[in-house]
Image (cartoon, rainbow, N blue to C red; front, top):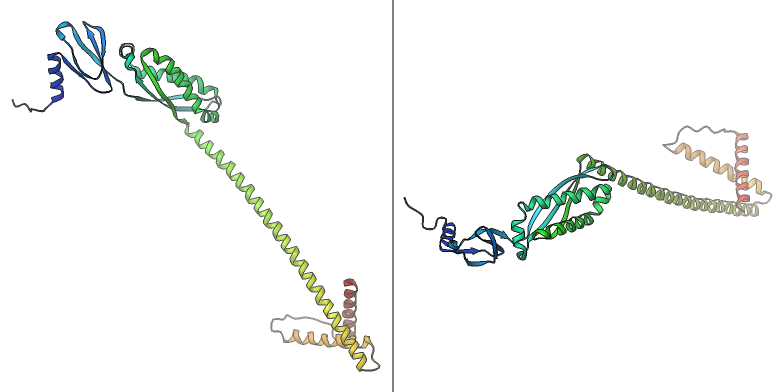
Length: 301
């Protein structure tokens, strides 16, 4: 049978080293040495001599690297909401207490998990759901202090403890999102209403200013008309002896009346307009226009 020269080289080398009484310990690792089944010493990284004929043997290895354990713990809050708390515990064995770490605990990870469960289920039920999210650091600190107190007796150091997530039930998440969405919609509605209010106020102010300016324009227009009529009446009275201001006003008003009738008839877009027409009606129209202009002039003054 052919044997590959480099197959299982490390395993063969380790077996050969034990046969020759030598053992290799890797970096960041310690080995436990026993003599006739009794703890003897802790072997540091490097090459060591184990005379098997004198009862020395290697009981096992213990890593000194930082390890991480993720723990998922289900519990409930003070307001009866069930949540899953995810904690990450980083720990490592101490080289000076390697004997305790190797012999005193059979399952380190289960031991740490039990302490994490105990602290989380004692802390979270005292908090409301919102406070649990806000006080994650306090929960992590409580877990770390309890673990450090318990695991130091077994030769382990707790490097750091983190509460990486708090997961409520799916229905609770949906309800929380709906509450948040409703609150934001309420704020948006208030802002929209406030914007519409400002817009209406500005529109009203603009309309008021527009009407004010329009009123000023109409008043000036009427004043100009009155001034023009007054000048025309005075000039006509001076040039035509025997005429009174009333005669001149009647003639002007009748002229404007006929001009208005002509414009209504000439317009292509005008509708049917019924105006009383006749000698008496013209006189009534003249008197009405004259009275209206005089009243407007008095009110403007």
